[in-house]
Image (cartoon, rainbow, N blue to C red):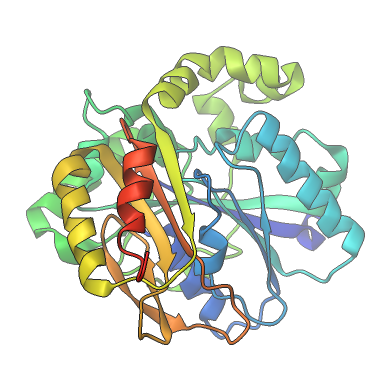
Length: 338
């Protein structure tokens, strides 16, 4: 199959809360008529991201295992890609959304591991989303997440500087300069992930030579297998595993909205600095619409519940020093007649 006939793959990466899922929904809802397969990777015990994505006809969602999209999870990605090949579905593109804690390198390596994958897919572009309001914090020398944020920017073929409406022009210029120090890439400022799709889809932006110039051993790591990958990234993954945890909550029942608000405020007061992301779908008493969190305590009403939809409350906390029992038991107090 010629390169022009290969299915283009776009990798969407960016740190926690940068707006990846918002952009993904924007892409899927636009009237472009493309048949898209979405591959989701979550960092959390309860699967939520797939429920936050709006999927139209001709679009499907696949999920990899919980955790970083690398090492053994890379095998899941290859398995999904094989399934897509064997299904013989006429796809226009594949979109891979990585967890906010992921180094995108192993995702890209996947497309050089397997001959069957190489014969059917081509890496089109790595899109990195950066939260204009919090990027500087993530890139500071003493940040626990500097390596992940740095790698996400370094691998970008196109960078979307999101949430520019939340910062002053001077701060925006400062973070653009900081990004350029890491990767002199095209930067598209945006709000709510709204961007001209012609600038990010099927653009042929991926350049393997550029990656190899920055990381000469990039393909060698693939040849050596996961042991080689762990050797290079092991210390960072070990630090990541020690510092970052997730607590999943899955409870049936309707929630008292006032109690829920008070619970959120109490959690924010006691754990705020340690919570990097909270996301969830909640069933509020007397409401026909889902109540959705996609950021840190940034909740809003979503679409109406489907008639046959499971209304179980599902939340995931991502952060450090999280106390599972305290979070679960205190949340239960928000359930009506509990």
